[in-house]
Structures are given as C-alpha cells and as structure tokens.
Image (tube, rainbow, N blue to C red):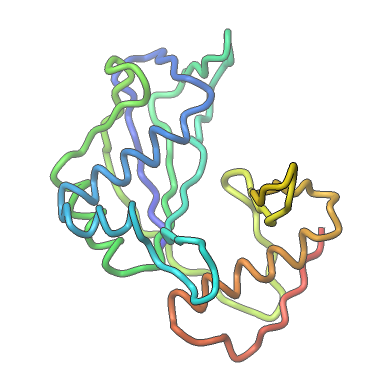
Length: 196
C-alpha cells in the first residue's frame, strides 16, 4: 500500500543534508520497532528471500522528499515550504500494520540534526492504480539495480547504468524475485518489457 505522509517542518527555513536516504530508512525501521521489536529485527537482519539467491528483500521503498519550494546551498537542502510530502510503499501487510502503529505512537522524526524535526500532520492511503497490460510509471526516487561481477578475484555488486544492455534483464529478474518472495510462486504472466 502506498502511503502519503504530509509533513510540517518545525523550522520555517529548515536545512537538511542532500543525502538523507539513510535517515528515512532508519525512521521506517524505528517506527516498525515501536510496534514490534521482533518483527523489526527480522526485517532488518533477514527480510524476505528467494531460494537460490543471497538477497534479503525488505519490501518497502520510499520517495525523496517532495518539497514544493526549496533551495540547495552548500550540500544542504533548504525547505521553503510550510508542508512537504513523503511517500512510502509497502506491499507486505505485517510491515504496513507495524509501520502504521509506529507512526501513530510517534508522529515526528528528524533528519540528521535534532533541530531538523518534521511533524506528521496527516497520513493518506493512496488507492492502487487501475492495472492494465501497458503501464507508465514515474520513479519517486532513483532506481538502483546491480549484477554480481568478479573484479580483482572477488565477487561483488556492479551498479548498472541506464545505458547498460543488461539493465532490462536485471530489472525483469529483480521483479520476478520480489514476486516470488511475496507469493511463493511465479506469476502467471512472466512477460515484462521495459521501454525507455
């Protein structure tokens, strides 16, 4: 389920680090931990997996902050808006439930400095789209996809560029693995074609 958090910055011209993804991820884990420390530990340390792979999937993603009026100064993002928005998408009911309870119990969070406090004014559930054979999506945050490669005698992740010819296959396999980890079966229709 896609959630839209409507946030009020505690300061009228708040400055936060441009690289704030770690803080967002930490806040999500903290909210889940408020509801269930056991489930939060499972998600953080193990997550969901697919047999034959080493990947541990968390099954949540989030957008960048949507700040209607902003400025960037010295690697800092300055919010000039009275309200900002943040989207969190969670397809797993348990995770969604624990996140909601955690948000309800603690309706504020900070990014970086304790002075950069955001108060959650409202949480909206965004309805699912009407699914069809051909869909167009807009990313709310950067897409990162990797393949395992051997470099200097060691295997490790190689981050794919948008122009890499392996990207379509890697995205396709990534989506199939996520589906399998959620439903414990392959989808009926495994055909997916990405068009730039």
